[in-house]
Image (cartoon, rainbow, N blue to C red):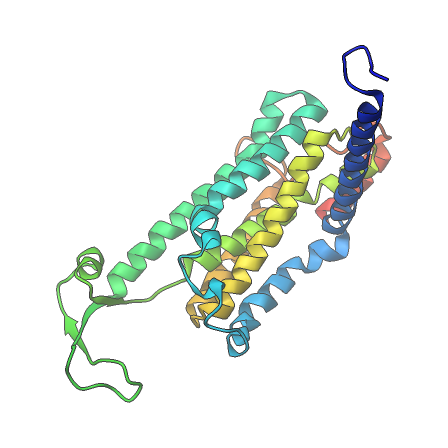
Length: 302
């Protein structure tokens, strides 16, 4: 039997069943993830978990194989995601924050205010990167490996100091640059992980208050969760396969301090012309009493 559109009724029922199954699976997965990220214990201790990973992650180098595909800097994940980490974070988190805020309030100014947190974090990241490059250039020196000469005890060739060379000229000439270095990759990954955890934590309380949650919003939220796990995986790979102590520890500490200064400091002052406010502010009073909304916002702030 065929329907009016020429599609067999059996096939149509099958497609409807598949759509219902996928929609149910999407709801279950996003509800579970939102419950975890919005949990008070998780939000209070996630930065501690990240600190433990950064501190003891290099110990994994004792067990991992250096012949693994992840031991190569040319791996697809490093080239595709790590080098554009901030861009991926802004795309998914920015889309989620904008869609959530605009679907609740239909206010462009409110959505822009919530998006401004990403602009501030991006400006802070760029500023620190410029500062770290300047610090490495100022404190570093250029060394030329003495090929065919005597070797040090570790088996590496003897290095000869080349004075007056800049970092760019030194590296282009195939020589080595040694300076005061802070791992920008670990700094970026830690900052992105903490930012993702903060911005997505509002979805759990939002759903519990009966907020509208269509498939596009849930899919964006799920992409943000997957991106968070990807950043954690890449962080573990960097620490295990490319251990650099203490530069990675300093990068992780800088990322955690940046998060604390923004989300635990500046943004807690409330929305104003100079402060965008915390995530979820003004969005958690949908279809419920103001008392429940205030309790949910207070729980999120705590």
